[in-house]
Image 1 (cartoon, helix red, strand yellow):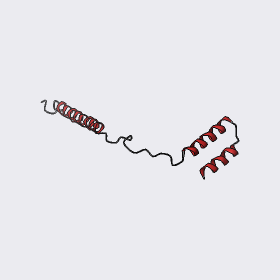
Image 2 (cartoon, rainbow, N blue to C red):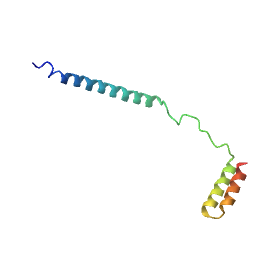
Image 3 (spheres, rainbow, N blue to C red):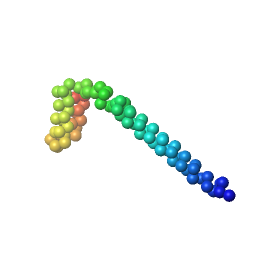
Image 4 (spheres, helix red, strand yellow):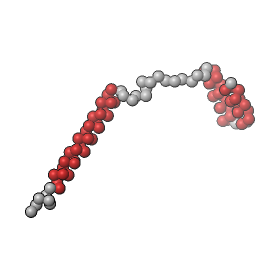
Length: 85
């Protein structure tokens, strides 16, 4: 009499345990990956600017002068082109 009606609970518990096991496995994988340092960006070499510091300072000064309104847009663009060469 209760063959089909009472059997649904066991299947639900089985699914719950499967999902719980998967969640634990994924969490353990993340913890192990972090402990080993897999995927850390800080371990990779930093690629610096190919420009000399003097050129970078000149570009910064040009940007600041343009931002303050000390030079026109045309002067800014011309200076930018000259510093790129």
